[in-house]
Amino acid sequence: MNTKAVIFDLDGTLLNTLDDLADSMNQILSRHKLPTHPSSAYRYFVGNGALQLVTRAIPESQRNDSFIQTCFSEFISEYGQNWNHKTRPYEGIEQLLGQLQQRHIALTVLTNKPHDAALKCMAEFFPGWNFSIILGQRMGVPVKPDPTAVEEILRHLNISHTEAIFIGDSNVDMETGTNAQLQPIGVSWGFRSRQELESAGAAAVIDHPMELLDYLDN
Ligand SMILES: O=C(O)COP(=O)(O)O
View 1 (cartoon, rainbow, N blue to C red):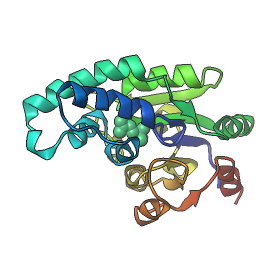
View 2 (cartoon, rainbow, N blue to C red):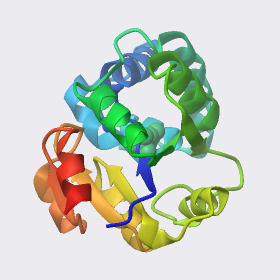
View 3 (tube, rainbow, N blue to C red):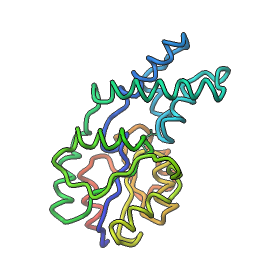
């Protein structure tokens, strides 16, 4: 493969953000005297953007637009206080980034996390790395699995879809890769199962970041 860029998902792929997301949303639920969820439940709430996370965490009987909007604003503000408490890069990610940079492969990020939060996380946890472009969820741009933002990254790098791979931990990421005609590579260390990734169209599923190199070498 002549890979010139890797497009990384963020939550569940580069960073384990689960506990800070769960703690923030549970804080909002407690404030409204609603039942909280164990962190593990948030594995399935994350992935389609913050508004979906908030909606999924609220009991179905309480899900009306105005209450969802209230909780969403509160969640954004709460997560703004908690985003770096327990969040950490996954083991082996820095090693992989080093190898990719040595091979002059561009590093990029596409996440459904709000854009500002994505930039903040990347600056805090990957300060020394030269990411060519980092895109989070922005007003007016459809979220993954829509391929629009992938196309924006390819245009920015002036490369074609055969020269990039998409790597992520959820069905949304595998569908994004497929929709953008990129090889979708799943990671088993994130929030979802290998089975979900395979049935969502993963071209391969890797168990450790450095395994991506074997895949690029083949
Ligand atoms: O859904 C989110 O908020 C973020 O999820 P992603 O980084 O896996 O795209």
